[in-house]
Image (cartoon, rainbow, N blue to C red; front, side):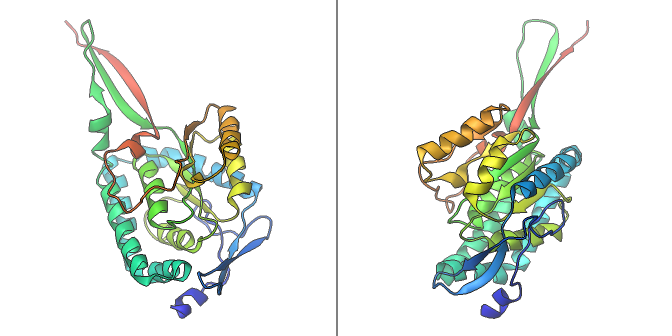
Length: 291
């Protein structure tokens, strides 16, 4: 296990499909459950957040413009690539938690979660959309559309399955994301970024930042070009911390998914499409039926 972890002593950010160093040049030490040094993770700065949002905005129209079937194929490919590197993910999770069996189970569940969401790309619109009854000779149709760029604060404890569970549904609908990885356990997010870079996900659709949550979350929340903000990873934060982020988001009427009181049980199977539709707007079109 140690050989796998020692290959990459210093990780980088993932922005626009590339792996730049942090603009600040700073790093954070990543240590295992026993205190042993694992790697240095790049410590993203405010400028890195801004660069990631620019990359996401540039990439989002192309991703949203792809067919739903094509997005499903791409997300399924992510699952295949993740499964191919299961041993590395397991080693990184086990180094953080000390439980190799639970780590292997989390990796398997993350693969299944990517597959589950991949299957929804060409189906959720039938659940979230509708044909609306109206008084008059018109067709009235409602269909979901992506909000655009979604900023995500990833869960701290569930560094892979929780990360997958907040990133994948935003991608299903055609959004691009900027995600702040787990501060305590960033290595699975870095490896996932490598998976994304070598799969068919267009550069910039997913941008991964490692660093300190308290430093990066306010910048993401206050950015005027972020359309949605997922604070699931802020579970356990104080009322004052959450209120400050929501005030920043309100400046640009950014849609916010509030933080839960405690980190969810990510091992539970997802139910419904609420995490997908949370990052959708609904467009309604009127069309005359004719006479």
